[in-house]
Length: 81
Image 1 (cartoon, rainbow, N blue to C red):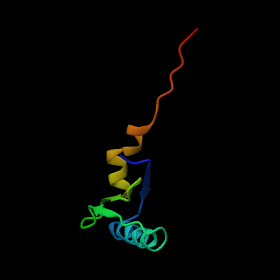
Image 2 (cartoon, rainbow, N blue to C red; image 1 turned 60 degrees about the horizontal axis):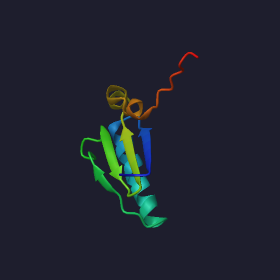
Image 3 (cartoon, rainbow, N blue to C red; image 1 turned 90 degrees about the vertical axis):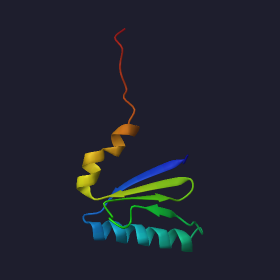
């Protein structure tokens, strides 16, 4: 499990790949975190496991299809009194 989840988008597969590479490099240089990546070959949806933080980087079409954010939204319901 992770403490945080980050969901981001890139406009193309090339941009998704570049975002992940840059983030991985910065996290390695700064706090010394090594992130494992899945999906970088196609770069439609890249999952980065950075320990306590999970990062999802999508192309917009893929993000809209999976709607990952909706799985984590809490529905607030009001009950009549």
